Length: 132
Image 1: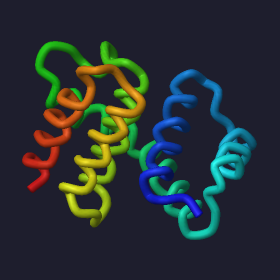
Image 2: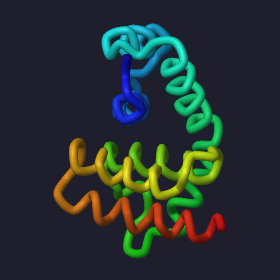
Image 3: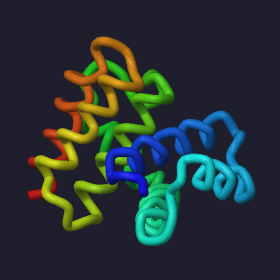
């Protein structure tokens, strides 16, 4: 059974694929099967993924408000996916905010560039502070 961290990795990958226009229902199901994400974890994954897509414009607006030098259009796709996941969880779930931010930092360390963890931490921390 997949861990919550593995679920979040999968969500970031699905969001990344969607940005590249490679996402469709069959792809999502095959991807989740390949990653052995089943039952409650599959529901958790799809709830987050669908929620992010439903709130995409709102999330992008919130993220853009927290960016100093550039806007989301200038952010690498994988970092954008991590930011969207983190922002969604902060704004729309009851998961502890410290856990959400820590998970996003870990995802950035694993999946993004060297400066990404610090960047993602800063943006999500601002979103969290504004949400309180």
